[in-house]
Image (tube, rainbow over all chains, first blue to last red):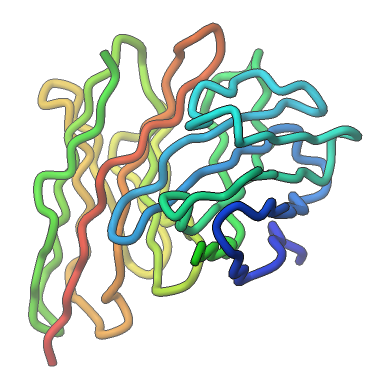
Length: 118
Length: 115
């Protein structure tokens, strides 16, 4: 069955360039999450959508980071004017969890996009 | 405050011996607890979850975990390690916070399996 799909798998960009990372969640999953995982670290929460609504963006490290999910399915994480400290793996996860639910639905992860800023 | 502590950053075992990966949590609400495994250059794969049903939870690949509320622990175990178990393991808590839910990851435990 189709899992969470992320593209590209690897992205190399020069400092100052803009990048866009795509996430295709599991069909029917209302919740979508973005995480940043630095080398040797655990994932750090960036932002969360329920359908097309961005309910929590408290983890976005700066206003250079922007995420959208306009039709409640595919999501794009955009990083403007990239810096070397943005180099990391960006993970996307989706879940059938709703805001009103019990909080017991697991998140299903894609393989991530490894971003390297030169 | 909600938090997750994985007590060991690295664990090394011999193939065929038991595995114990320790996780303690702090939560103001009844949490849902998960263990994920991450192999190199891959995303996180769900091993098992606890969601207030049975306190002993069985997962994939022979792993299991026991929820102990009195000790605020959710340790992951496996009776006999296999070489393919070598990976990074994350304990994850989902709890209420900020008007919705918060997902909190532990720092991870890297499991090494020696032949």
